[in-house]
Length: 272
Image (cartoon, rainbow, N blue to C red; front, side):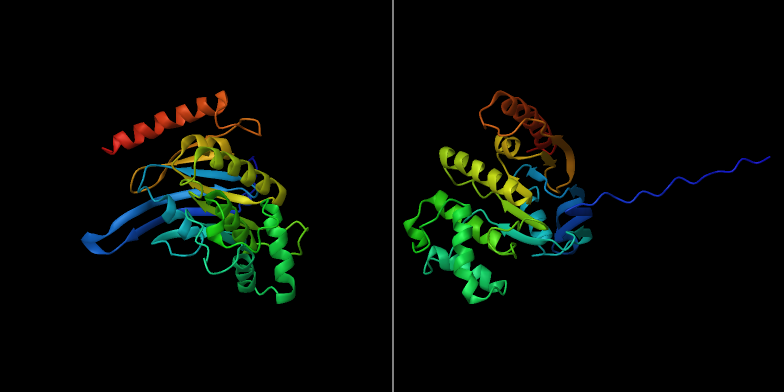
């Protein structure tokens, strides 16, 4: 008598806020083509804070541009599940002739928010980054750290589509390309606290690019290490350290040391 064989139930992939499948990106064609990314596959869960780390030129910023749909992959696919996506650059890139509030209101205008609502919502966004009362200032009147807070508020303005005070974080993907790299250590440490608070309060999904290993461990739920060019995922490090964290805490330093050793190995393997 032949035994009946029961087929294993098919498994539906777990939902992801970002799913990259075999993503490659080449610039140029033919012999002059430069392969920046090579077969990158990565899932980022909703609400996860993932830090991308790697040597200069490994394609981290290119990867963010692809996720933001500012460029197209040469091959592979990227799925953000219809989430609203905002990209925060290394520089604040604020319009100097506009007030702080007007810079944020411009982003709201691009979103189609009615004029009557823009000022109220810009005020609420400034409050969320602890800049209440600075709406009438010009960017040159603010410190570097304050300008980055305005840039963060503007990025949030591109994603939040519910009235101020409501939970606007659902379906929100924030891409951050070394936003604190040019700041002094103390300002950067304070902004680490700010972005962690906003991430928690709004339920954001964050993909954060950095060269700073300790910064990656300080902020991330997971650190993803990319190889030297062409960039590909070589290792992932879960960060099982209780929050809130200090960048100089012993567990942060220990994991950062382990990741740094692996990064050195990878750079050395490519002759860097």
